[in-house]
Amino acid sequence: MTKLAGTKTWADRWGVTGDSGTEYVVSRKDDGSWACSCPAWKFHKAPRPNCKHIDRLLLELAGFERQPTVVQPTVVRPQIAPPRAPVAQQHIPVINLGAMAELARLRVRKFREA
Image 1 (spheres, rainbow, N blue to C red):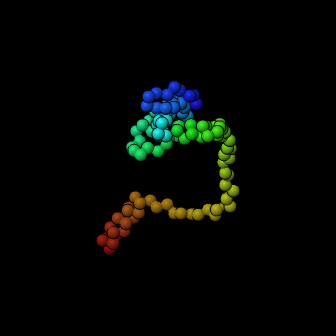
Image 2: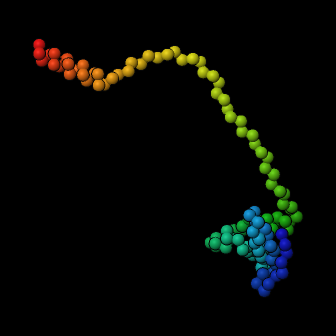
């Protein structure tokens, strides 16, 4: 957070660095209204809520230091299923449709000849 010089319109201005490293200008008017140069604030329809840069600046001005975010690595271990009990072998007859059709044709022929 860097204090910048005020202008006619804005009484106070600060440079606030975003999460991506981009520098945004957060400004405050004499009436207490806030503005930010980030797209989230600029393109939001009225009434505009505070963006995260304004909130971050307000917290720092109130005396709260921004703590770096520490991400603890997590170890993902694959879950191994317990071994299954052996399954009895099932005998499923294989059906040959060509052979069945031939058998049916021969039976019909034999029936007609009889």
